[in-house]
Image 1 (cartoon, helix red, strand yellow):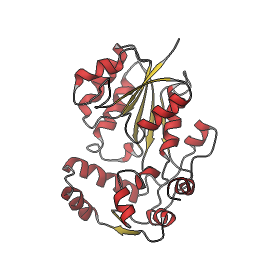
Image 2 (cartoon, rainbow, N blue to C red; image 1 turned 180 degrees about the vertical axis):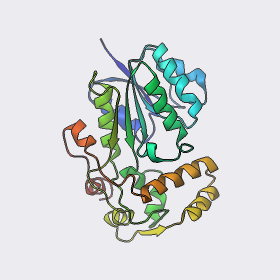
Image 3 (tube, helix red, strand yellow; image 1 turned 180 degrees about the horizontal axis):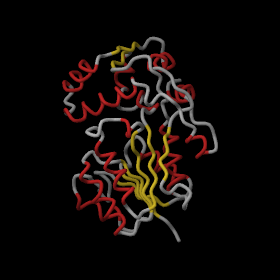
Length: 266
């Protein structure tokens, strides 16, 4: 039986790589976003059923609105989807319950469903330095964040995509599993920037300074609180320890930050 896999957020940092990885392995993919031929918009429930109809599995980026999670999972099950793989965040169990509610609601909905499901928990991507989030600051030579010298095991987005592809196309062995995806070693933000270029300055903001900076850019209070909560967890060392989940799932070492730099910045 042929299978078609839905990829939500197909133009995003992980989604577009999941699409490419699946297509390169010969899998039929239905990539959806707010601008795709088959539209998908978390805020427009009428777009969910056409996206889900006829697919066997789906890669899901958790919605920002927690109220969307359970209805989506229930609809996926009603439409005959057999497997959901959701990207979530590391340290979710240790962060205050008012933060990252969309991710938490998605995980709860999966646990309560009769679907085969797998959760991929990841935190900071290597590609945050070179795509969108911090790119403009890094290229300008100065990155300002509420960090200290606690190391972070940055994970490569292509590793996430390859893990997602493995899990989406495997039967049984990954059902009900939560994997924590990291790079092979933890390095400080200062060290990461030095590897990219010794001329890049790291400015260590206080949480209050970071909040004011985000608000001045038009970031919402809710998202600002979530980002500050994430960085607090990082400073507390909750995310500092690398795991071997990537290497176990892919049968090769996780991509190092040095390899990412060599492939992206050289």
